[in-house]
Length: 364
Image 1 (cartoon, helix red, strand yellow):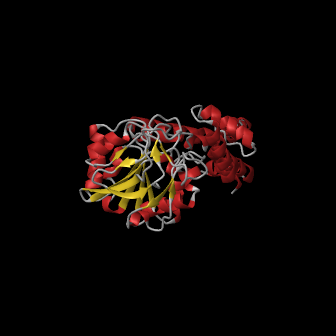
Image 2 (cartoon, one colour; image 1 turned 60 degrees about the vertical axis):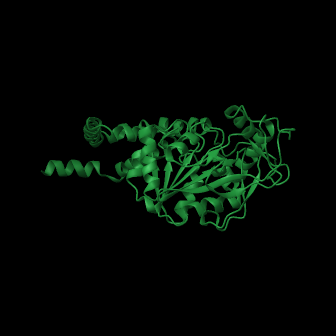
Image 3 (cartoon, helix red, strand yellow; image 1 turned 45 degrees about the vertical axis):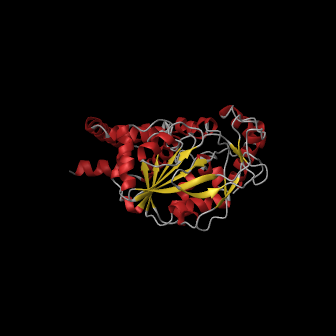
């Protein structure tokens, strides 16, 4: 017993504790890229096209945040106290997934569905039994806009809590919403038109008219909000005061904010690994055995771990930042070049505007 105590005292010296703390710090920092995502609209992406600001607004007001990596999450929350966000889904909701979302709404939940040109949002709305539909043609406004006709400014047209305290909302290459039986919440000005042929010019078959870009309707005991632009919720657009107020109004009156990432690409590797581990008891047992073995090795040879730290630090501070395009030293031209590589379909005007927004965000 005395030998074991002496061995423990030898291992638990101050240098070894410092080494252990350093290992934890390096590994923790190195895991950051594995727990983040570069996918647009991702709540794990804190760059200009992510939605971490939606999460931050909920956090600032003390709301509980629930990530929905699968639709089973909808059955686990108290529907009457929750608002869920579905932003530009990358794949269709199956009948089973749609049934769980529908049950959430019919039990009293609030669901916000935002998209512009994607094919899956309208199918989800149909399965929900909602009547509103996303048009899918770009809406432009040459007079009431923010820096570009492709960024129309919409204003509230209803006395509703979801637009309380909202002066206006700026869209970013969005579209309109055919309300059906829903109530319009936000409309464009009367100078807006749908650019059906996408040529950026008002044509003979395109008319100036005020059109809804956000609606709300009852479905069962709950509500479905439809917004014709998912990018109104990205970090670069939530910087606009009206957009931030709109996000806050949608979340207000609820205790839980559900961020539905179940049908979107770009889950961080760490999250995918966690989901895999949770789904398999065999994997959980195996990892537990590996952890016990690693602790035994660590107890016998703590110095061996320090030989790996230099490589870990190089990976953490080098490639991880560069591949994300998140170097704080990047100039405006470098940011624009990065955006052109990532979004080759964008025109130069949009690239420069977003690059400027990214610089402003980093300077805050």
